[in-house]
Every structure is written in structure tokens, then in C-alpha cells.
Length: 195
Image (cartoon, rainbow, N blue to C red):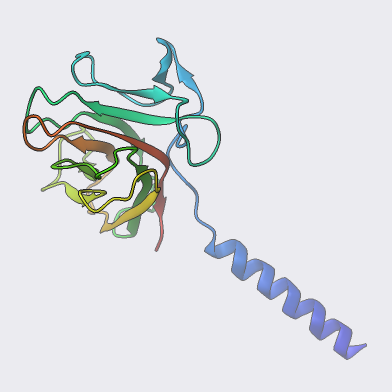
């Protein structure tokens, strides 16, 4: 009987420990499955560039999971352009001072990687008036060394400033040099409070 009670207590303790370690993705529509109000190429809960030259949109041409992803096409006509999809998240009351993690997967169908371009994750903390707090945190990945059609994972961890109330998340395509060209996809983004 004591042995059974001990086993039950251990099982309950393990279940509570696992539950306490779970994190919650604070991004809405993080796999880009839901189209936005402007049609199939729009993405629900994400802000996309309004300039049609900054070609970033929802696509069903490639996906890591589900049926859709976020597609960015560099037409090669400009340099130093950073088309992006962004989402502003309200931080939980207990978030300031804790660590957060932004992650996403990206892929290029280009035979030689992205030439001069890069995929980029960007975290920008905002105060109660939505003013920026310090320099945004940026993480570059998926450049020239990317293999064709291979999904690459990247994440960036940061400490949330005490005065932060919001965080602006951006998934960006750094077009690099003029005439570099290139197409890339983002999928399965997450933003979590991890510690």
C-alpha cells in the first residue's frame, strides 16, 4: 500500500513539474494558416508592407507544417530593403525581468542559397506608450550557405526590460545587394516567456 501511495505521489509530482515547464506561444496565427481580411495572400494578425514592391505575403506554395507559410520575394531591383511581417504582443504582467525567446523556421527554394540576402528575426521591446526601449535584438540566418528547400531553425533569446509592456516581433528578409534576388519562406514562428 505504501508503495502504491509513493508511486502516485511521484506521478503527481512529475505531472506538476512537466506542466510548470510548459511555455505558451504568444503569437497569433504563428504558422500563417489563417488568411487576413484582404484575401488569401494577407495574413491574419500580422502586419505586412503596404508597398507592393515589398513583396511579402501568405503563400500555400511551401510550408514546413500545415498548408501555408510567409513568402518573401526579392525582385533584385533594390538593395538594403527589409520587407517584414510584424506582430505586436501584449506582455504578461509577470514578464518584465524574465527571458523570452523568438524562434522561426525559414527556407529558400534557390539553388545557391540567398546570394547576398538573409532571413532575420527581430525583437523590439516597447513601453506602455509603445515607444521603443533600447536597441532591437536581431538574429540573421539562412544566407549563402542555405541548402535548397531545407528548413532552417533559428531563435533569439533576450531579457525583457522592467518597463516593457509590449514586444514587436518582426520576421524580415534582408535583400542585401541590388540584383541579389531570391525567394524565402518563414513558418512556425514562436514567441515565448522561457524563464
